[in-house]
Image 1 (tube, helix red, strand yellow):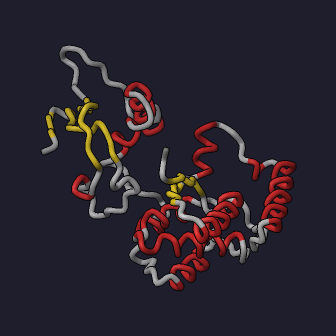
Image 2 (cartoon, rainbow, N blue to C red; image 1 turned 90 degrees about the vertical axis):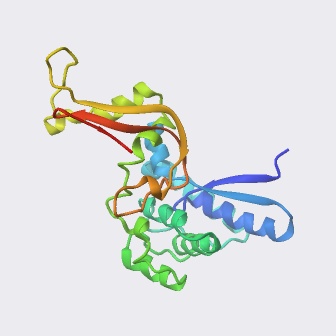
Length: 242
């Protein structure tokens, strides 16, 4: 029997907030360990091809009523956020980025800011102020403030192979090349070679030593991966990674 309970959450999920508050009460009176597992709820909805309740006017009303009723029953301070829903990607990246000794304070602060104090967490000024109260320097939190996302050149192949098979991974990586005017190359005698070389067997833990970019703000640091690019053949050159 497991000695812990995994709790998957997203800061902009009202149900996650209520469950988090209930977990705090349980942990106060019982010796039960909860492992907090951050997820990006919007990404899961997109991956499954379903529409979130937040975008259905009937479901969102029921959702709000449910949350208010359950919160009142469990004596949890709760206010339906007037800016719901927002994109929580940077908030969740922030949780991954902060040191372990500040994760709990970070989570409490941002949960309560959104679902108790009705703050707009899509506003950078609000986020900066909250980070200041937590004594977290947002100027050093590259991964949280990288508006255009985490770097991924060195990690995308191994990350995709963790989810999809090789055929699907290659399709994902090559399906958009026509948008950039990249032509197809044939493999035949006399033609110019244009190939990517990779291995699918090598297993490793992605670390900063795998990143050649000056930036190190990867969301995949510490992730177990399999498969990685090893070189290219292009423009009559043969290049192999050391």
